[in-house]
Amino acid sequence: MTIDELIEAARSGSTRAAGRLLSLVESPRRGEVLDSLGPVQAPRVIGVTGPPGAGKSTTVGALVSAYRERQMRVAVLAVDPSSPYSGGALLGDRIRMAAHINDSDVLIRSVAARGHLGGLAAAVPAAIRLLAALSYDLVVLETVGVGQSEIEIAAIADPTIVILNPGAGDAVQAAKAGLLEVADIVVVNKADREGADQTVRDLKAETKAPILKLVAAEGQGIPELVDAIEVHHRTDSPERRIARARAQILSLAQTRLRSHPELDRLAGQVAEGGSDPYAATEQLFTVDP
Image (cartoon, rainbow, N blue to C red; front, side, top):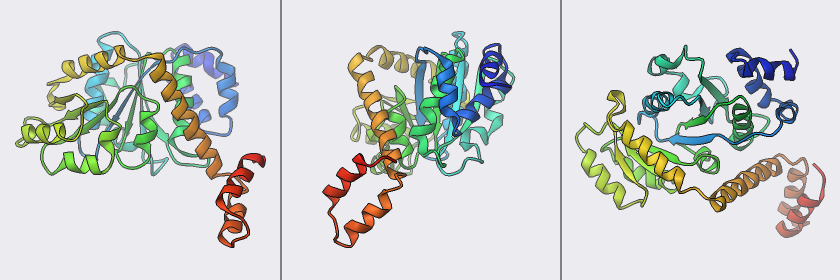
């Protein structure tokens, strides 16, 4: 099928065609797909991150249910920063998303965040634009909660939700890892466990973001989380949207510069004393890739 035929099939409800198109936007044919979409109104994007085992998959599943009750079409992108094959924590646990597997208005997809096209910043905005063109109202991004991906997600999602567990120094570790710096909303999941209140107190000393308690496996606190997301969304502004777009452009530019064919040659000149970093930087911007 041609790209136009795939788009038509996906808009008619074919999840297979949608999956094929998502594969294409992660390939060198990304530009062809994006050029075929036409004008697109951006969907809402929610980022969910946190350390392994925090309950991100369970929380995402509960959020999908909540938004489906509002008749919204939802796409879930599970981002694995280390491997294009494992499918991320979310897709690795189909049981928790079982209620949505056969829902034609829910799309669940893994995104290879690392590869020859370069990182989350390159892969995800294209996927979101495609999903918007396919009439998905909401995109949920879920990452494993370690490394550069979280900073990149914060440039795309609004809000970014950081999920932690009670005790075990999660609040302090999240602060050290920089997770709380990108958090618009912080969630203490498994809040029926001992230490939940202390974790909330610890977090209040580390962040000014709203902090909610949740027992996602039982649906407790999900309505309050949805309300917090809605409140945050209503505070969005043109200035904030421009700031997110600016961050995305800079992240993509950095990705391209890291793979610039002249970078190693210029670095060699600087290392050997034949040039300096300032001159090399100027050359990097003036030499065509």
